[in-house]
Amino acid sequence: MILEKLLMTKDIKLNNFHKSNRNTKYSLAELNKMTQEEFTEVLADIWEHTPEIAAKCWSNLPFTNIDTLYNSMVKVVEGMGEVKQLALIKAHPDLGSKAKMAEASVKEQAGVGLDRLNSEEYNRFLSLNNAYKNKFGFPFIIAVKNHTKESILESFEHRLENSQEQEKKTALLEISKIARLRLDQLITGQ
Image 1 (cartoon, rainbow, N blue to C red):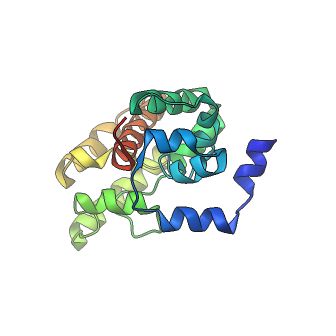
Image 2: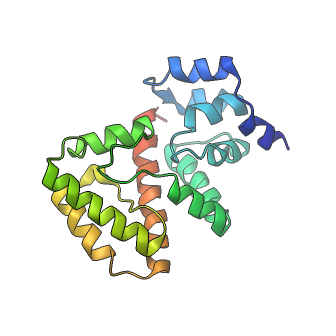
């Protein structure tokens, strides 16, 4: 009940806390001292629009290193039911899309040039996004940081051959990679 209230309440003070600290890095010591509300707000975007993952991990404080925090979050995702896992997958934007997306996704996609596609590239991404969503019912997800536009397109085409179950597992694995990269950017030191 407390978790549900926490996730449904949009406290102005807490929202301002997060907005004013959006580019701030945190140490584990700082995270370990936060209230559940602060902890959840700071880590809310690690798992694309799914702050309940951070909220549930708070009870595992203190974290001794980034790995223990990350592993705690992964266990929460693994423990989610199928419906919540699919909601997590569907919370991610289409690659190369001009749709509104989380700030972290915007930066990640811009990092490989997906915000600067020419019309031919844009149409190819649009076509593959549509084919993928029509087949699997959720967006194509890949941790773009270690990819190029070309390798992303190759992965798109290869993964369209996968089964529904293979792609669900792959999507969750890629989301976990994205979450780890985001944690590494947000948290400093031990």
